[in-house]
Image (cartoon, rainbow, N blue to C red; front, side, top):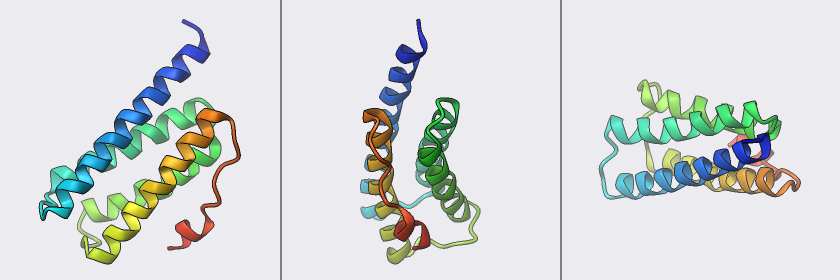
Length: 118
């Protein structure tokens, strides 16, 4: 197995992680923002960050690092999951999806400065 094949497995895992996150957001919207759901979202972002670093996708890695930090603040109770914060977290998910697509396709990373500032 060569590096390109391994990287394709990483992108498949990204797709699985993004699908898991989307399902978790649906669960939260139904009123179940239990710690395990938040942990599931965190673990998906954490896994994408690790793979991005391993394959040199620096912009994807940097964005996921910031996203992971925000999710960790929710996990440890520093931030409560208000509807505004959930909007930010879901918006970051959309940006993460764009970052993964850019890394997969070799395109330019999305402009994420506004989302990071948010």
